[in-house]
Image (cartoon, rainbow, N blue to C red; front, side, top):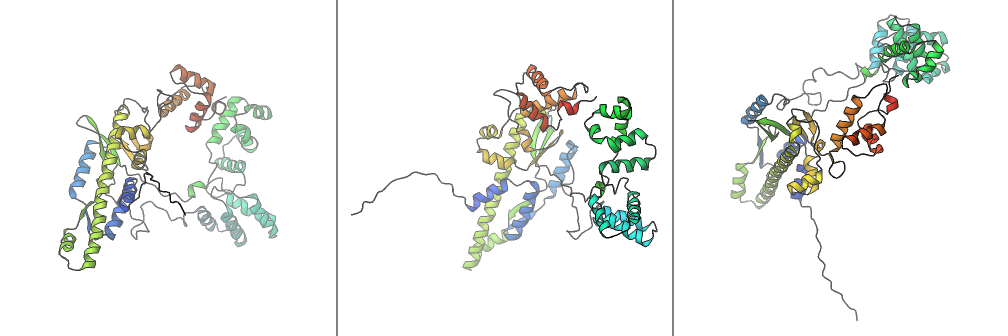
Length: 447
């Protein structure tokens, strides 16, 4: 005889329906992603229609008249080769504008003997993207039993080309080639560039002074000359990374003397449900047709509801950020008030994951500039302290005001911040300093 045990269990379970998945997906889309998404779904769903109301353009232009700092280009289009239209104005052909092509073009104009021209072009093809030659590349030429005199002549020919410094086998040689091209460099500058770059980079003037019998002032003057040279002469010919354009999702604008958060929805098409297919759904006698249209109708309603939910959530987040950071947007301070994602979620009575999706990858433009929405989330230092961003601003101000010959140590910065009411550990000061891209006191010291 077997005993059967019955047990009641209460459990919460979240089921991700297609509607909920779409809602989460749309909420975290930025402006461009949403525009592309709407283009795709309107192609897939015949019940959806999109149009660009002409009054949106006029409304946008009216807003720009009141806030001239708002970037334009909302209605513009950029045609590229991939689009099949005109090339981007100012764009370069990567093959014809490469460094090696530029060098070979110069060599063709020199009317060199054929053996020298061929070897010079071979060496030009070996130059890396920074304009340098690897020493082992020339070793390969020796293995090919090419006369050393011809190799030296070809190398000298390549090093005579523009940009100055190209074809160098080391940083010192690159700088010396540029100094020689200038023609007015002093022997002291040439010696320092040839022999003392490591000491110069660490500002260890003593060994240079003793070896070359120079004063500190003479070394610093040479340092300025060397600092004006280009250690990477080939980088101007590197293929440029495609420019990434940011379309703000939110504007903070002063209208009628009051700051307001305005969603940048001027570029979005107006989405509606086709009246023709609504009538067809009601009147069609074909079961399969009605079933298909019913599914598409449901999807269309989900989309419209989710678009409305996205706009409402983003608008509430923008209004809350404006309220929390009003002194910043009003231009009264450059420091942010403490605000975390969880505190904003509590204020709006939303789940933190909803706030996270609503602010992810989105940008806000105000008079001060364009910022990621996440920029305005800056936790407090301590229980009731200022925000981390405010502390970093104070730290940056202290470093800017320091004596360059006696820079402030992390411990000294820690004490000065403490005197201003900011209690931080020395290691935290060092962490914030490095996040700001500020070197240590030793690196900042000017002898």
